[in-house]
Image (cartoon, rainbow, N blue to C red):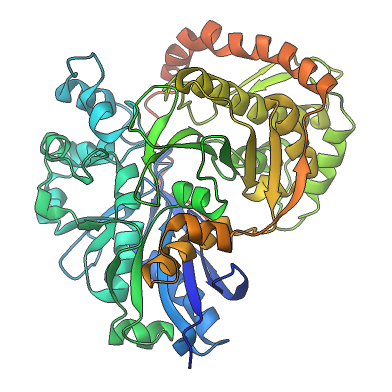
Length: 525
């Protein structure tokens, strides 16, 4: 039988999705499974690596029960970024994996940067090497936290593994990952494509405690007999290096030129502009391209559609699992409100702010509230705040890069909203396109697999052939653009005027580490 399919495995924060694709980018079969997440203390977020694997198994079984596994030429993985776990030589976790949302190292990431010092040009060494400005989210901060709080686990750890690395080990027996998955962790040299001993030494971690790294599209190993029995895959199926979900989404949307960026309106709000040279700036974080060549200059706000869930649960008091129509009602109410929500603005820094301020103490702001405002106004302000934030980040990056972005390709849950896409178009002044491919991250991983098994000579060829057609276009409306420019002038002033208050405000809540005895939250997809 001809091996005419490749699988893209998307192991995200909340679920694992596996989709089998043809060489023309048509999905043929898929499987999904939820990945639970726990919060043992406030702002601590953890997952059991065993759940990454069990969800992957279930997702792959969803494919192999529908199609002959002999049709699968290869597979590649895209993964949630900035998430790691320490494991022993068998791949068993020595403690829970720490998820990218985790903030336990809040008091240590600045001391780590100070320990590493600065470069002759004045840039932070950690920024110059990794491409990531000094920030809480890279896993280097959590390695440093473990050195201080769990040194016995650090000493026993055989491998500090990312999500892709963990799944590759389960599938093949090899401890290996992709450049594009290693890079976001914050201790990978983004210029030379090797683990940074400078950063690792400061974190108290040995080089031999990190997996082998390979270029996207390289064969990392083949499916073992044990993994074949568990998943239904054929033993010997090549496992190809994929990459972090943000960058791979760029590949899956064919955003491989400086005038077309990907815009992921997902749990986090992430956008990336492609470029060839290695450049660092506080206006973005520099992420290695999943093609192995060039970079994405990426803006990121951790509170994207996360805020939609927060609003529905905490403000509206609605359990969306029991009332899924709440999202449509809120959007309808917001659509009836004019631009600017009748004088109500929101700043969406609920989980701190990354580019361009890099302030983990920042928090959300509503300004202009009056008795005339209802939940429709608040929801409109929420939607507009994310669009204004993206406009601000893009404008800042454009000014430093000396380019003018023409369009975004929108993906993620928020991209399905016509109202929200139009708000993004009007607020940014850019065309917002939506591809027919909903699962762009899985498709991007499938492109890595297709390149790795020899279907295409270049990633650019794979993207040009496999990317789905554009099915919706939101064009900026001149009158609306002018109105949002007026709002942007106000929006830009809010954080700078209030930033000195966030630190003292946070201290009124204590250190945030106490939870009533026996309390633990768990979140599922």
